[in-house]
Length: 340
Image 1 (spheres, rainbow, N blue to C red):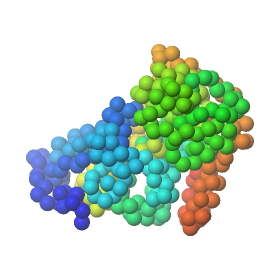
Image 2 (image 1 turned 90 degrees about the vertical axis):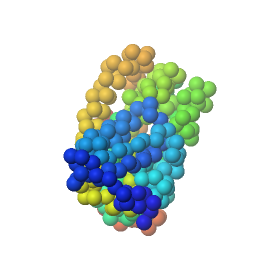
Image 3 (image 1 turned 45 degrees about the horizontal axis):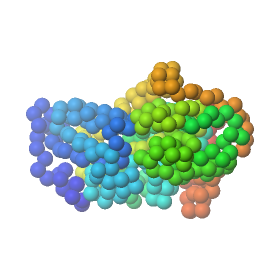
């Protein structure tokens, strides 16, 4: 039993009004992103709703910007019990989560929108291999944050496949860099916090993220061309909880966490649809960012690496061919309905 479980199960005080349903507790949440980054308002909403719906009995204290652990440290901190809750990107941990890490994530031109990516994540959550990976890591996944489609924001217009060749793109994680490389681009591994400077200094030509995220990091100051080639939505980061701590919770608290999580993801889909339109119609013109139409979508589809095939191949090499056989059809179905 971890120290977190002890803290949750020993000396829990009752609160008025909700005493029989929700014991009083404070849980720390380590977040790898700064409080100003676009999208993190959903974790704040989650924490606020847990407090509100428990009548103040449960407090979630968020520690922003890696103050309790960096992006690649949080998973181990939560799994080991050093921190009860953590937010980081599942795709950073492909060695530990080879199947779970790709749930709604990393597969290029597969998920047309956040709803599609979240649906894949939910279907993967039901799979035995995904649950085994999470259990072995000491984790429970409470939520998935799904983005609007990832696109390029560049220092120059990019309208053709030929223009992609030699383009230096800041691309994180697995599969994504290989996909861009298959088109002749040059993936550059630059930390998120350093991409503004990298573009400003000319080390990188393009950022790679949903267009609605570029303004919170001021990338619009150094890259004025938003390219409309969609590579699809992805599950970008998740709320993880220590498994022992989660299992020690009263059923009422587990139900509360799940209900708030489901509500958050449903609201997110609606909000991001609105945000995508506002970004193009209002924010880009106001910030002097030009939306550039990409003309060679069919050529890209013909030339690009198939990330689903590559994923299936790699899982087979890791002895996970059965999981690939179960789950690849979900991804292929999503890709078949992909709409730019």
